[in-house]
Length: 112
Image 1 (cartoon, helix red, strand yellow):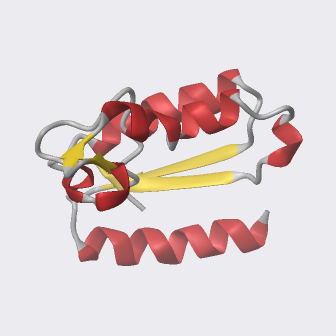
Image 2 (spheres, one colour; image 1 turned 30 degrees about the vertical axis):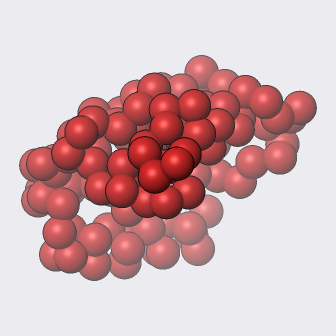
């Protein structure tokens, strides 16, 4: 649901920069962010069999650029033969979108 899967780093407007786990000495750290990224975790894995099917979803008017983020992430998954499904609906970065996407994601997960 509107994943902050920015690569290589989140933009300045992203709240991801405020999360303590991505900080060193109280300041956002790009290296820490990259070490937790989907790309790094996948590229450092020995087998794509280690990964579940990924379901990503967002609104097409997301103010944080998540539409572009999941488009790039989907391409990365596909290039690395990782099963994935992407859902984009009309809306922004808000609970209206997340409620609708969550419902659709659960249906997709249990119908696969």
